[in-house]
Amino acid sequence: MVAFRRDLHQHPELSGEEQRTAEAVVAALAELGIEGRRVGATGVIADLPGPGPVVAIRADTDALPIHEDTGLSFASVNAGVMHACGHDGHSAMLLGAAALLLENPAPTAVRLIFQPAEETGDGAQSMIDAGALDGVCAIFGGHLDRSYPAGTLAISEGAVNASTDEFTLTLKGKGGHGARPHTAKDALLAGAVLVTTLQTVVSREIDPGQPAVITVGSFHAGNRPNVIAGSAVLEGTARAHDHGVREALLAAIERQARAVAAAQGVEVDVDIRRCTPPLRNPADGAALAWQIAEAVGATPVPFDVTNMGGEDFARYLLHVPGCYIRIGGDPGGESHPAHSSRFDFDEAALPHGAAWLAECARRGSQLAR
Ligand code: NI
Image (cartoon, rainbow, N blue to C red; front, side):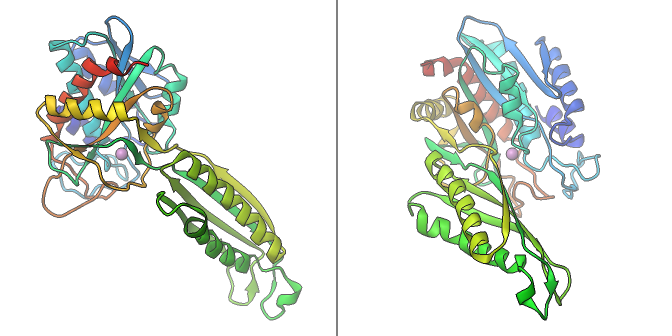
């Protein structure tokens, strides 16, 4: 697992471009005597035969557009691309789980899903569209987490990741001279009002007990001190743990955008892009994941973080039960979070993740509904 992980780490590929990675996965599976098949552009699926139903275990394989600054001996050789989220580790764990399942097979069929393009939020859906869940009764996966030491698995039922929708609000007014505002329609001012108003959605419209975030991350308008801006473009993200809260946020963003535009006398284009849904672990899936963590000698702890990050594993759980956990991998020393140019994890996490995934494959059919 360490050698495989380091090879992937040294040769990271961006979402949707995981050609070498997919070839490396197929080759490593072949060394174990497992036939992996390429799915879509850069996905890989391998089926371990057995009676139905099928239990799926999944890893993601993609890297990020970040220039690595770790100084590791196996640091990225692809300038500007880095495994800064640990997906190299996830892939290695799934390969390790495959080896464990050859030694001690599951009583049912098992499907290994090496999924590309998690970071862009569309890889899981592409695998589902290609039939990855056909015949599947349950699915399991996990993410490395530097907040916990190797050997600790953080597990909770309910939401462990948020929805990650994006919006672009384009305000169109009428440019003019900064000295004569009455002859113009100031799109910049309308944008400023809208940024402020959007911050009332979470504070005034959402149950305080429900996690929700609206962030406007970019605002472009105007380019001269004495010219009134004729257009303004706001971009942002909306996040929620609850499916209903998600819908309320998206509806409120559109309503506020149209209302502010009308009040300010400008036009608005509203573009809302649905990305990943909230990732919610069903209670039975989380309970089984916890039992399995204990059974494989890991230390389960509750995942008691209000995590507003996204994870496209959520899409699988819309169709089948299962569980998504956090796999402790704190390497010690200075803290460099995921998506940092100095991110690394403790490779001692690999056997724990592999053992947990393999045992999920063996017991997962308990969740069949
Ligand atoms: Ni990740």
